[in-house]
Image 1 (spheres, one colour):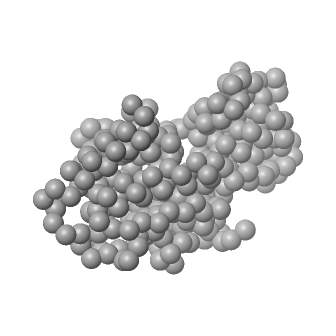
Image 2: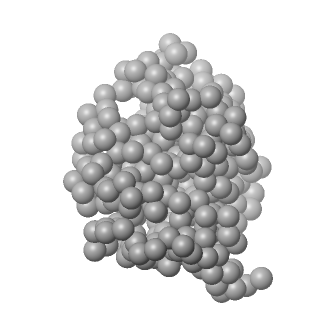
Image 3: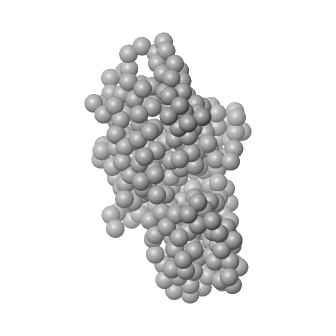
Length: 310
């Protein structure tokens, strides 16, 4: 089936599921703005975000605008200032945004059949690096200070192992995205880097040998997946309508195709699905992210410092 036909099928399904019997859309701002974190290639994210926006417009009756922030903190600040209504926030960015601005998670992403994932540290296969200890004095690439897998969990692991990240490495950089970290390691501009599992696959089309040339030397404990979150103060009926539309079109060919192109998302889960289908024991969606808060406290991460512009 062609992409055009996929989109047509998805739109029709979204209309049938989202609007049939729903009546007029509740009052909403003239335009709902969706903000996306730059965890991959910005152009691909924006194109996918625009596709999702068009499907949401058909399913809800609202107008949507999409943008990709230049940093993870940019999405947090946009939601706090009311410049973004919906944030496709990575895990740690959600935790920061919730604490700072009351941002509310409504949907959890699913990949590989699970609502959680792991962080990993990668290096060139020929580097001789085989453990955290071997990273001493090396050039290391993190993703972003507000990245869960690309900063927080690796940072906590280093501290737990008795290493001070500020002194342990020869040099550290923030590459800005997981793709950029993989490229930096592949090209030898960094000796090692922190990414999500398995970020290598996101650049495999342009670097066919990346799986052979770049290896994994460390994995984290499970991390709750990224979110679709809403700014504080957005009317509940608007939030509910958008949430339900996303759930419905995520089950259509066009919706799923857009989500996979966006962040390799294969499904979305609300609280009910999280506890029934995925068997997660949590009193609320927000509480699902408490392990991240625990790791942040252990790592001594200052949330206020993380969201300051760099």
